Image 1: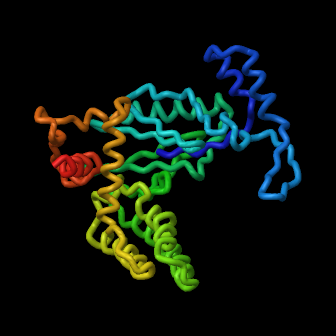
Image 2: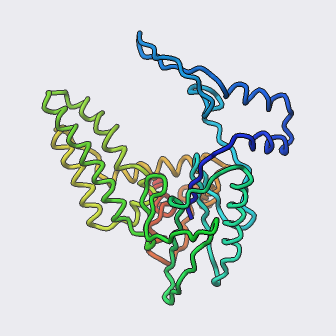
Image 3: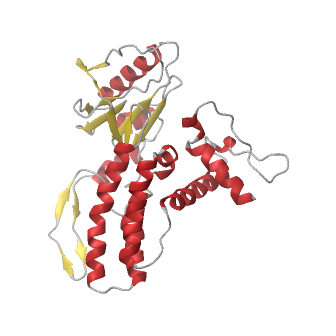
Length: 309
């Protein structure tokens, strides 16, 4: 379930920080630094007028990228927080939703205690259920309103569908990439050299094609693959050079992500990439479904084994 919140008061952080054991003097320095500060924009020899701000954090400041929260899950659930968007993920077994619903109510209470307003119009719930005998799912109730159950949702730029197919996400990526192909054609008409066109392609089109590709490309359909490959082929004709296929882009991203997980011993999935006693191959993971077989971790293990060979 995706939460959408808005902050409407600034007194809670001091209270939360004091309860965490921080001293009073540093707490006074933060609001003094962040409120009533003059800010202007400087580009070349031009400087904008000065505006006094009391919200957010100044650009270039070490406090700007600092995002903290003290709402940890009590049950075996995941809280995924990205800026002001929070997602609760739960695996429900034997039709027991008590832990999931309790966690949602606890998060709702935490938002109220920390002066965060829940935007119910943007708060959605999606149920992934592959059981043969499916039953109706009773909606969640938050702030005296029922949370809308949707068949698809957009999560960090990726479209998720309740049946875990990716045609909707492919359509979104195709639309974005085709819009950028127009600008590539315009650059070609002004006779820019192929190296510059290739750089533009990698920065504006290939970056779109490769966005979160490790999460969804493994379970693509043949039609989705042809649609994305057609964009690569069209871009190659415009530039006049041979470009990496969509499958090669996926393999490259898989290997890079897998290597980063292997090198990071604190990563939650680090133990999935264990070497066999020979030290020449990674241990395979046993699967029972094609969906899991084509997921990122198993695909990444196969890519690493090909690299090791």
